[in-house]
Length: 215
Length: 330
Image 1 (cartoon, each protein chain N blue to C red):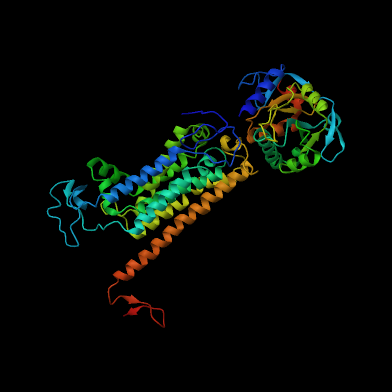
Image 2 (image 1 turned 60 degrees about the vertical axis):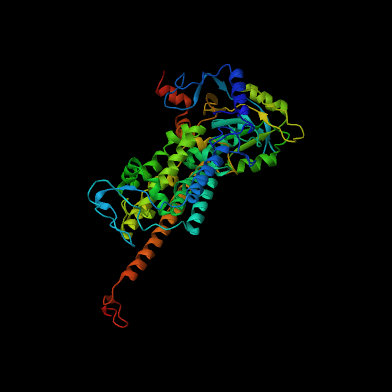
């Protein structure tokens, strides 16, 4: 629980451009269930290592796709598996033509333990289509900062305990096909919310939506 | 009482959802559950130790006052309504079988309410909640009812008010409505999602489920003729109705595309099972295990009915022919 709170606090304080995350406040368009960012975020450029060991150019590889980015770690006991499980379930139930336009990218905040092989095995548990990225800590921290997310912090392990926890943002950043992130999804987003929003983002994109219903 | 903090250090008295806390197989103490079970057992033992009353009175409606039997005759049973009558002669000392059934019922309640089932059910897995419901809402109360001797049941409803309440609750259609109403109400998302984090509310809901179990089983297992005793056929029909009604919530669990409850959907995962898979398992458990329990009881009743009819069958009735299949006079 403390990690969840920490993650939310970190995300909230570091994300100056985030709209207030209160129901009904600045949510746009109204029929989407994510939380609208005050200023859209451009898709950042960073290159990390994918689970097959090859380098992954985030911006180029996800260009034009609805891209959901989440920073977490495979030993996470609560938030990460719930987010990934929710997304895995929903993506599997979507129309394949919609699902193939969505990329879910999981970037580890614990590169020491999350090797490409570990990431691969863990993500396959949720969906074989999920992309896992790891790399050096500096690049991962920069990637988080480029999305206005607070960098993850390693929490102290108890004496004699070889394990440790990593405090990280609980937000999933959603990029539309226009390569801009207009929405974020906090922990607590339900599967029915994902199932509602993802097809909308794929089919209409953000510009089309804005053009159809200017506010 | 609420929100004792994380880390599992504080002792909680009743199993409730530990919102946001990852599941751990480390044993946790729930003294409230122990106290509840010990109190039930102690009350039963105390009643057994105090010998069955040889004198005393209980309330029955005039129309159903026992007219004696086995050496005892009730005089003037229709003079007052309700009237008080001496103890019936259909009571026997408590048998070892009854004590064993009651003890087993207590063990089932304990297993269903205590760690780990109680905690998993309260906040982690809907499938375990279904198992818990079967344990504390059906199996446990049924065993406790079978293990309570007739004289003790009569003692429990000896007072005028207690008898009136018991009689009202055991009218044939009331248990059907109460049992299924509670089943639906305790599975409403607004109830599960909002109350499971509170120890007090979980305690209250568990008590309601246990109490409803007694009401549910009474038409089928109740042994007091003064409380709407039904024929074997009616008992089987009653259980048959209950066999089909829980199919509705079970179907929601099984066929819903996404999780129904935010509580279980957003809870830290246990053993890697997804929320949707957990929900489907819950639906299947409710249908198969619940159905097997009821169907098994119906089968036992059917064979008892058959034996009862066979024992009561007078000479000269039709019996199957050895050759033609048509009946003939024996």
